[in-house]
Image 1 (cartoon, one colour):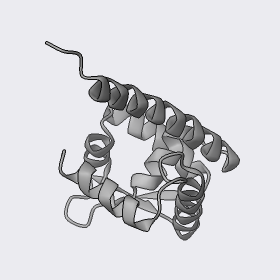
Image 2 (tube, rainbow, N blue to C red):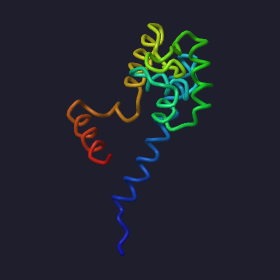
Image 3 (cartoon, helix red, strand yellow):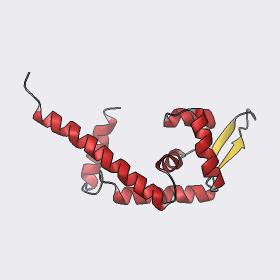
Length: 135
C-alpha cells in the first residue's frame, strides 16, 4: 500500500496544532490566575450542571469535580446550590463574576488561538462544518 503523504501530514499537523492550542490555553488561563483545568471547567459551565453530570460532561471523576468546584467557589466564580427536585443533589452554577470571567476568557482564547488566527470567517465556517461532520 502506498504511503498517504497528505494523510500523514494532516495527522501530524493536527497533533501539532492541538499541542500549540493547549499551550496557548494554559498561558491564557494563567493570565486569569486559573489552571487549564479550572479554565476549561469554567468554559464548559454554560448552564447549571449537577456535579455528576458535569463530571460526565468534562470526562473526569466526580471527586475531581469537587476539587475544581472548591477552587472556583473559593474564587467566587461558581456556587453549589441544592437541586430544586432533589436537595441531596448540588447544582454547579456560575456566579455573575464567573460569567464575566467566562466571557473574558473565551474572548481572550478566541483572539489568540493558533487554530483561528489564520482563518477568515468563510474558512472558519467551513472548518467547523468539517469538524461537526466527524462527531
